[in-house]
Image (cartoon, rainbow, N blue to C red):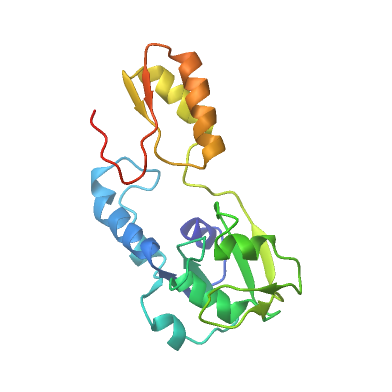
Length: 200
């Protein structure tokens, strides 16, 4: 998106920083560019967008300045991640904003931040004092997941003998179990217990 925005003059030339899993995925995207069909054949994001990459303690040492974009993975802002460290620098400053682009568990630091009202005190990490929410917070749905109806359609198309439901909260898994049992009564639907080996 940053590549498209820059090509369309919708985004200035201010620096873009990436970190965490986002850096690794960008590197993989570039490495596989010649091998997979794409809308932009041969596009190399690290060259075209030229983001600065950050890792580890670099977050503490990087001063926040206006006109910069920090695209950091871990939207749940789990403690000790880059996004958590940056959020702690941004949360109480009206000059900055945080934008969430995917799901965050309501009990996670990111989930607590997303549901907080302006001025509310938010605890992002047990190691640091809670802070008032003063920055702007926005949410967008850029989830990397397919919708549940798309997943259902795919399973119905493949018609597997066994279906293993391993990801999602309890209501979502139960919806899939019930729905797929009705769609595919001949399929065995398994809900494994986390950490317990499952023999297929």
